[in-house]
Amino acid sequence: MRPVAPETRPSFLMQESFAIDFLYFGLPCIWNEAIDKYLIFSPYRLKIATVNPDIIHSDDTRKKLAQLDFFGVPAKPSKSEKIVKIGLILTTDCNLRCKYCFVVPQARIRYMTPEYAIRIIKEKITPEVEEIYLTFFGGEPTLNMETLKASVEYVQNIGVKANFIINTNGTLSNHDLDYLIEENFTFVVSSDGVPKINDKQRPMLSGVKSSEEIEQTIRRLVETNALFKVRATVTGKSILYLKESIGYWDSLGVKFAHFEPVASSNKEIKYPSQEIYVEQVVGALDEAEKVEMWIISSPFMNLLTPSTYFCTTVAGEDELYTPDGSISLCYRVQEYDHPFKDFIIGKYDVNMDSFNKYSDRINLLKKIDVSTKSNCNNCAAKYICSGGCPLRNKVETGSYMGIDGWMCYIKKALVHDAIIRIDRALDKGQVPIIFGESIFENLSRKRFIKKRR
Image (cartoon, rainbow, N blue to C red; front, top):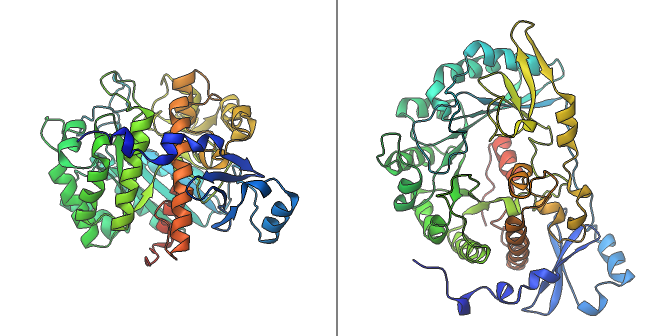
């Protein structure tokens, strides 16, 4: 399989018409060259206005859109006293050896004890809390089922509404999987797509294939009507198989797929070119529309929920607790002495039995807001991209306030394509297949999937 030939590239890439897209009073405004008109998208109302270029800047146009209630205010970081979100990194151990793994090579293997997990939950559950989101992460969290079960049992006995989420590599035992299904977990199952790609990128610790066990897990989740999504890491090799992977996941019964470009310091893991990445994603989205599979990816993360910040965790809406007692605001930073320790905003003091917070780091991370990034001011994707991943920006530019140019190009192009897709879907009375992470979280909360039209 090869990248599409230049003459078959999406027309918006040929002309790079997304380069003239702009922010229209807080709303993404894109140029649709197929009809020679602008599309102004309101994520707040899920409406699109088609506007002639000669009146796009007129006061009357703005007034009419205001009358149609097109405008809104992007969300800012906030916390609810009634809802608490906790991530427990149960272990840094794993039974896979993914080629792009973000765990620091010299990191020690650690396991969180049941006693410490319960201590964390006790710290976060105040009298005002009515609901808890408890996410289990790793490593591979099912390697520490003792602590997972103890945490679930404790939460179930304290009288708050519980939402349990697990990020797993999909190679867990049938016994453990059935327990998680019985406890009504929401699942994020790692799968890099078709077996020939998944098995190269995500081999078992022993070097054998992992795809057969992952398939078995997915089929069981489908059979039991569990809510889950597959989560793929896209590399320079796997991007060429993304469309094929959509068909593969569909054959297994997958309804939600989440894919992200690789973020790795491993020199063997290559990025695809920006153009090839966009071309292949567009083809994959075409396939997803055919099979009615909903897609999540960072270019669309806040597509329907405009925001000034990219990551709810970095914004402080939830906290991650690691086996070594650290409190982190990034899933990729799982130990106290991590190279990007700015994301470690606290530490558990065993002797004092208390959690100490570092206000200087918390204040630093709070400043990471797209409103403060001048080069994003007129970007159509400003409140959809929301400045992008802070850690990725730091790695690529040396600054949390920088912008990863590789991702910037991709997001502008794919947001452009997404709005055209939404416009087409709305015209047909269909539900768009593209949406952000927060929508999936709401599905997890409601445990209800809207019937597709």
